[in-house]
Image (cartoon, rainbow, N blue to C red; front, side, top):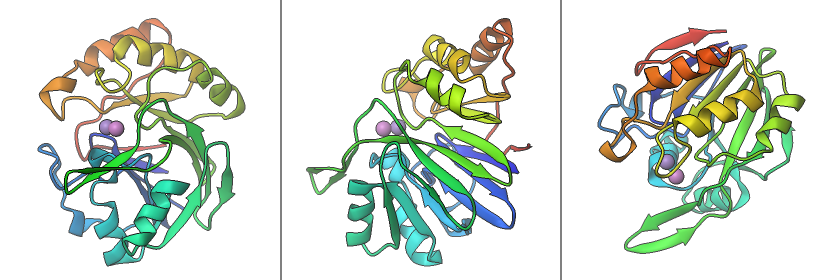
Length: 227
Ligand code: NI
Ligand code: MN
């Protein structure tokens, strides 16, 4: 399986002839290197409705016919906007043609801001996705929570994508605690440096994980790891 970082919380994973993308925030991301019209995927997994996660999700879905997989309320919002959707909710899993998806809790908010109005889109989530016998945990936007221990115990995680930007999500020290509970083979930091308010030194995160016996890969934008 190939895991590619497109910036912020956006990753694509590819395996078994399928490709799915998480939180495709490309337009408006000052660090993004690819454009939304270069994205061709089978499914778009959305953790919540904030603009830095929903991002280009609707335009990619409508252009390519990719299925949007999201918590129920956000999925309904996307369906009303003309996308093909598969609604799920926290704790539920489903076997798609490309692999298995399970929604995990995330401590955060979820809303779309449109024309000066806040449209709430239910609970945010994280995802555990198994493709080609490899399992990825995308934590979404979240604070630290103790049930990550359960996620780590119940899933043999090949890779965990964890936010470290602080302010809106976990900072470095909390993300280190998260990784200790999740015990993935590889930890990849996300959701930092996109904006000044979430500036972090990922090398500090990597060093702290190394002290805890955990392996971290800091990906540059458009870097790819093969698992
Ligand atoms: Ni958010
Ligand atoms: Mn965010």
